[in-house]
Length: 463
Image 1 (cartoon, rainbow, N blue to C red):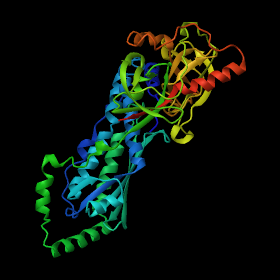
Image 2 (tube, one colour; image 1 turned 180 degrees about the vertical axis):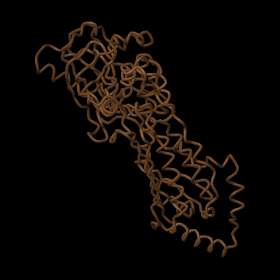
Image 3 (cartoon, rainbow, N blue to C red; image 1 turned 120 degrees about the vertical axis):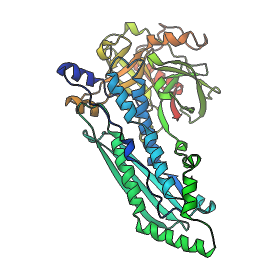
Image 4 (cartoon, rainbow, N blue to C red; image 1 turned 90 degrees about the horizontal axis):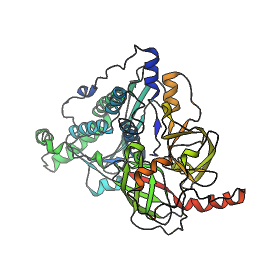
């Protein structure tokens, strides 16, 4: 899952202020509809679950959206959104709701559930069944009125022969004004239908019957009563470690040169269990957070070792001298899972010297940015750092709320915000400001672009 920060709800308070009497509807949590159900006829079977790539991406996607909205409770975007709406969205969009309740479904359906890497592991672990669990989630990105959750469980027997494919879809209607994504209603419907379809699988029932006959022939005690006693033990309810699904997001970071430190957006690495910087030559170096400024969405990372590539010193420009119409550019790693892991150049102009509601801390820029550009450097034509790419206006959600499609509205944190983290950094981290590093000719700019790419890294954040 590639990380990009999108401002997706700040327009809602504007709508509310215009119409005056419009208020956010109260969101009722449908969790109670997923209740205890009887033990299935498959309670003698041991199941191994294999997470598909789509499942990993879906969980990462849900957590990414949640982290973005959680960050709006305070910090640089905290003034932009109605906090009641932010809280409702944060409660609605939660991957744990999906994974924990799927866990409950599988635990009360089968005797034992474990996570495995592939079908061969099922044979090694002497499991009766293997399931490739494929989950896909759409939080209204392609349809403005509903969110969907699709669950598919492809079942294989111990001989790696496909038995059945149990599928379910759940939909949740997004209210107007959009106070939440209706993810939980969609997940609830999908989980309930998945459990029903799983229990109704005739092919799975046939497999369970064969297993029962084989077990009886071996005089093996696999009684439903024994399973019920086991499944009622709270300590067994979390045997399926959905928390083990790795959630990886991608963004951009950069080095000032001559030091082990990198700069990126804080929302990129927030709550990350492991952070890896991937340099232009493919070298991967682990990093940790050493300084954070949540208010300005900035984080300084420290590499465990110096990279092999030669780095240049990047000068910090004076963002207060930047004017509307000034040409700027960024280099980063947009949509790296599609476009590849080579740095990409993008240019534009400063559209405004203030951000949403005239926030003086950020620029509005016309530089085209995509998912993965977050945390990248924003340079002026002199090669000075004047900002850090941070966010973009979400076109789909703005259209859903206001009926108009914004065109290339993006934002960058001004370099002046760096003063809050500078005092915590070594003196050698940043070169003096105000130094012209690029003479005004095209060849020198091309040389700078070629050299500075060594400083710009792909950030992999594992949650």
